Length: 595
Image (cartoon, rainbow, N blue to C red; front, side, top):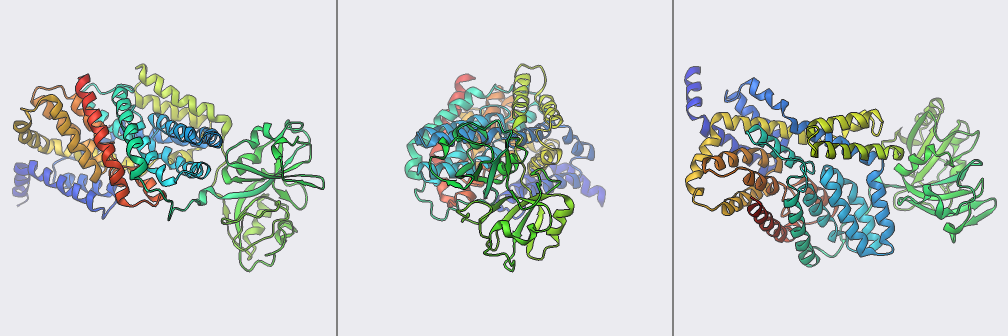
């Protein structure tokens, strides 16, 4: 009986492979399970039926594409951790007050360039809150900026081989199928042409196709909570005698000065012209990353302490929330009971949407105020035992490591240069760069691993196994033999357009990496059967699999801004269709002209 079943499977395995593929796409479209789970089930189907064996299944783990993708995620995380991306964004935000339209253009250009050399998904994650601040500064509706941000970063990712995981996957599959593969800048001419077309379409259509209001859009972000603190100028500070406007540590975009305390004076006006003196206390509002970055400052003491001289770099650092039953509610922060006995330093206080207008010691405590506190482990332990505080625990935020930013940037440049010159392969260059940034502590190991999107890697490995299954089942040959008589009479430009259109439609409804892995070997075999060079069709798949503009589910960056901007599904459809047409036409034309 078992032999009979095996015989039937062997005879009809090409059709069985296609059936699994259809079920796989149906699973992606229905979204009952995450895409990675659907892909794993598809790979298990081929394994269970014996179409692929364990050696073929585990052979996909030797593929360099997922390893390279993971390495690029870590490099992106290092650029974020060292504040390199934040520094560029801050520069643009400062310029926005002088020339808003130019600042918006610079922000999009920065996102475009960053997406060309690091994975575009973390670029969008970082830039969403920056875009929201830029919208407030310029008075432009955030809903007119967030969708274009995603589109620009998608286009930026198509200009180099390392800009998006899809490019790396197509290149890897092409190499597995006997092609030479692509250099890091081989696709740049097509990407720049597509970007120009996309920019023109956005300028022409976005102003009246995108919503103009910010109704339902929440401009607050818990990760962007603003803390009140104050900075005391140390006696040996190098900033003594400087105007506040000249102090580098206070020029960060997420730091806002509200007052200067000098002896009995409380200065609120013309702060930037004030000359710092030893003992001055600058009252500031800032985000948690900047607050933690200032802990190690040699020029300022941050926060307040009631007794002793607890340093800001205490053994332990925790967050705590004031409960509604706290007896100190309504009292000044400096008088809060838990500061009476242990030696603790309060680094900052935050309150939902309503920071105190006073300085830190005189801020009156409200229920649900959050505090960041440091001290010895023994003294911090008393906070855990305090029934009037809840949520006491380690803060998840991390300080910037700005002194290591040149190393992170240099590591990324090394990847680009070494792989572009052919000195080392892209995978080897990326792994060496990861080793360099970990050794230099640009990012800690735990943070590095957490910066990797595991869903993407699992999806890629599983779909590579599905691709092997389709090849071994003969499903690819079956599809190609069916399509060849229909397509053989088409001129090359029409065949390129047909492949692009089919791929981009599938990308809008199915995850882009899955489309890239499945369609690439099909078009390679098709091109070989009709006597055409396969590279033009492979490039068409590469670009079409990233050119997801018409739905919020076809590409990760669209999904991110879809949630952040409180858009409707149809907003993407209206703004994305013209872009899809313009970018697709330009890309196909460039491929046909250059091949």
